[in-house]
Image: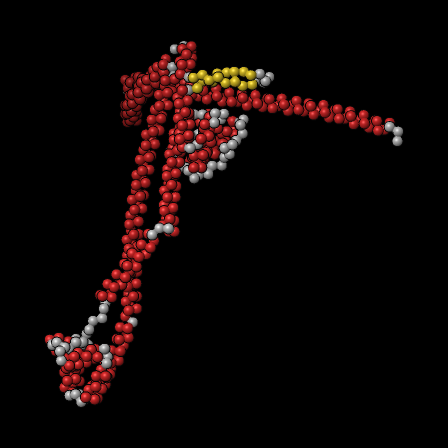
Length: 523
């Protein structure tokens, strides 16, 4: 394939773009810049993405593509709540070093954000939109996710503030809490309500129709709540028989009492004084119990609070365990997601590498590619032959070494040397020398072939691709523009210096003239 056909293909693939610049003498010169249509399509898609994300600065037609891309990247990074230390309104005619320094800061922040797509500063500066587009796409996705999170947070905050100041949910929640607390306290009171321990056995079967039955019920209740002294005083006044009192106490003890039956029998047999002393001791105990019952309401409240606290602690423990389980599931889910993302990134990188290899193979000449393939195949065959020869040579060497060792053993064992064996030894040595010479020649030939293949591969690597040529051409044009700007500035500085020197000379002449006039003028 000739060079003219290659140039025709490059002209069909690349798109021309006319540009103009000033030369050293200040004249306007026009030249053509050829751009890749794929790069142009990716550039348009990148600008559409930035515009859809809300970066409307890409609509300004006077800005360069580098300005739009750098501004869009900085805006997207700041929208994702990351700080980038650059000034978007940079100089218009920035030099190449300033642009690369600017892009280096952006690349550092992208690595801090854990961007899955690798990018270099020279790719942003050179306008390599094939590598810029996935980065911008990922950043725009992050921007939309960040906006959604902020919107959800603001919505939840506004609803909570509205409910706090104007809503009725707070009062309803408080009322529900109060009603639930009341129900719990009432249930605890019902469960722990006071129960009678002493009751007359005869009063269960009889109704309270007569005055005697009512009196017995009253007396048993007074005995239960520690009012035995009133009962005994009324007995002394009315001169009731002692048997009624003893029978009453006996019936109450048989129902339920902490006093044993032996004590009751002894009380019945004892006198009135001993009975009164025992009843007074029982009365003191009942008074203490009454004080406890009086404080039972506060105790019930404390018990209710204690039970509520226990329930709350149990619920909090359950909530903590559930939260731990949720966090563990989230961590597992995040690990699986990260592994899936890594696999996806590896798959995409492999696809990108395959595309790059296909692009490179498309741009390489077919004849040179066939030549390289033939050389590689020849190299592989030579390598296989070398391995086979090495194996055969090793086997032959081992056999010869065995024969030599056997012959040496024979020589050492036998003092008389046979002439036939000497001839055999000479033949073996000659064969060994021939084989070693052949092996050395083959090694030299193999090394020569390897050097030729490496030199051809270096020549192939030295040939730049069309993308690299386009980038180099664009960089040369930028350097040419910068050199023209610097030449124009130096020319202006020289002209300004010359005007200042002329002004200084004229001022000196004027000063000398004024001095001479002042000296010659009569005082």
